[in-house]
Image (cartoon, rainbow, N blue to C red; front, side, top):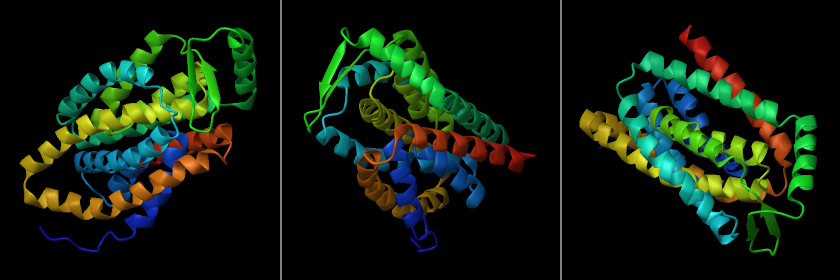
Length: 285
């Protein structure tokens, strides 16, 4: 194994990506995968596996911050994990059978779809309408109560649990196959559809993603080991810079979330997803 300083610039980039991802609950792999595929020209399977490994450390760092803040709904998270983990395994296995060109196309179309859904659900007029309906419906009745470390009390009800399970299945399969989808679809369901308080939804989503990504990453690294030392060396030369970056960004993100309005963050992220997906498809054409 030969470690080099070739990718030193990934350290500051990783800090920025992890900060954005952690403050919004969006999977960092949605930024790292295109960076590795388009910017560095890596094979999609190597790019996706490396992005997942990087996201694992970034989300684990952020998870500790949210854990200390007591914002994770563990009951909800465990229910989603029962669905997301098996489908992530399936996505990892079958993703290895998909040709690289098709894998890139699926990635591009997938994040355009996710970006569009986030944009539609977070338009200001829809947000106000949903908040008004939520207040009226749950002002006296709710299923869950959570109190964070600062003493803030969150009352909420997770609506349409079957939709949540469906998104956990689709998101888990997408995560295993193309490294993105689980965090983004869960955010759409919990925040936009059910109006779970944003900080609780983000923290719980990160808890689910960390466990699911851990399982998917093991599968990808097993495949890397089968490819030989050259592939593993390439991956290690990337993650020696990306992992420290996402660990730092993972601590900054939860603090940033308190400052930046959630609706503006989501709209910005959704537009970025659409642009990245369109650019990915353009490179294929």
